[in-house]
Structures are given as structure tokens and as C-alpha cells.
Image (cartoon, rainbow over all chains, first blue to last red):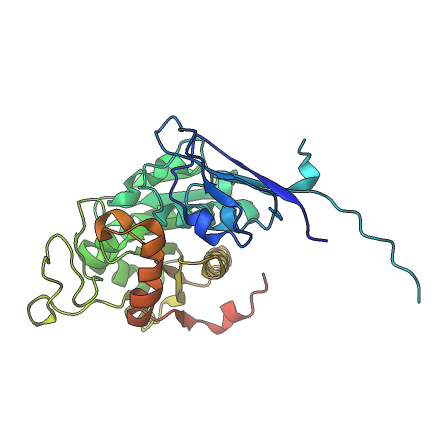
Length: 81
Length: 256
């Protein structure tokens, strides 16, 4: 099962440049057109489930605006062969 | 809610809380972040002195939570030389653009490299003078339109671009000189590794280290941030091949 993750985009730093949106391998990001940051940009957000917490959005983000979390999944106990 | 255990990535500690003044999508921010991450990983935040240049990154001292000095235009390597000689136990890096390093500061960078000063230089190559409005820089590609070469850079009258990494790598004082790009996640990770190696070079006292980073300037190129990354991939990398131009034998032994 794919890992489940989520991101938080900081309103203070996000400038709506869309680099994370084009880089997201799961294609679950878009600009939030219903919201404006204090600087007047539409910030990025995830608009549907599917984030795996791979942090590629954070790797390409020029403003270090994205914090990435990933759910801890318990691995099934390995069975001795 | 989030516990520290499932945190994958957060803003590096080496940054202050101040948002950068860079245009949306400018890869200056990525370069800043990589330097900040490396300083944090190596636990150097409290013993680093940065030297800010003149150019878009002139306010770098506002963004890094380290000590910083501001150099006159192009003189960052000279200033870094002084700082490093007076305080040899500190880590000294300069962060310069192509208008600063390759144009007015060409003398300083060449002589700092030739003397083998034990400093680290982060060189941002975005093929124009970003801060002043996108004029032609020494690194502008042939045929590339800028505000001061409106019909494209004509090599007959305006010469050819300067390949800084190739030139610096010919000097004996240089320990580490590589070119990386910031146009996709893979190359950003490679760039971070190169910056890490450059700082390791300095910490071990193995000579001058420089990382050239191919960068974008969406505003002055007149492109969207995503299109500028494509421009780097399609036009800048063929003109400025990525690669390791000089890695001394001692640095090859460093395991990170």
C-alpha cells in the first residue's frame, strides 16, 4: 500500500510559483484560487487524496514554504523462513 | 496531528523567519535552501560567516541565521579571504551571481582561486543581471535576448559567454569545482551533494571550492517559472555542460 502523507503550505512564504504543482508525481497539487496569502498570491495546496509524503514538492520549493509529513505505517512482522 | 516522528521535511533551521524578496519561482531560493540545509546537517550554523554580493542575492544576510558581511560589488572573494585569514576556525562562504562574480568580480574570483584560499563559493549562473532588470551578462547565451541585447547577443560584437567553472578549474589552488543545475528534483539533490562536498572541502582545509549552479530568472527571461526550468534544460545545459571540472584526489576520498 502506498504511504499516506500530507503537506502544510505556509501562507507567509508561498508565492504561488507552481513549481511544486508541476513536480508533484501524484498530481494532487493546485493553486487554491479561493484563498489569498498576505502577499497577494494564491498559495499551493493539495486538492485531493493521494499525497504520499515523498517531499518532492519541498525539494523544488524555492521558498521553503512546504512542511511534509508522512503517516507511520507499521510493517508486517517478518516471518522466519 | 503531526508528531515529530512523521515529519519528513521542514524549513531548515539555518533560515530566519523572513520571507525572501525573490520573484516567484526564482531558483535563488532553492540555492539558499540547499546551503541552509547543508549548514544545518553539518552543524555549522553558529560558526559560519557568509559574504553577500551585490545583485539579487544582496539581501542574503536577512535570510540566513548565520553571521554575514556585505561585500562591495564583485569583491566577495577578497572579503572572504580576509575573514577566513583572520578567523581560520570559521567556515566562510560567498554567494554570488554571474553579474557579480563573472563580470565586475572576475579578477577577485580568479585570484582567490589561484591563491587557493580555503573558502567556498556558491556561484549562481542565470545568464543575465537579474537585479538591475535583465541586462546582458558575461554568461548570456549567444542569440539570447536581454534588455541590453534586444536583438539577441551577437557574438561578433559582444563576444562569447564565459564558462567560469571550466576556467577556474585550470587553476592549481582549486580543490573542488563543479557545475550543477537546479531545474528538477534529481539535479537539486545532486546540487545539494555538491554543496555539501564543497563545505566538507573547506572544513578539511583542502583548498578553494566552488559550485556553479545553473539557475532561472523567470521575470527577466519573460517566462513562467515552469517554462524557465525547461529553458535551463533545453538551452543552458547544452551551453554549460553539467559535471565535475576539478576534484582533487584528497576530496575524492571524502565519504558523506
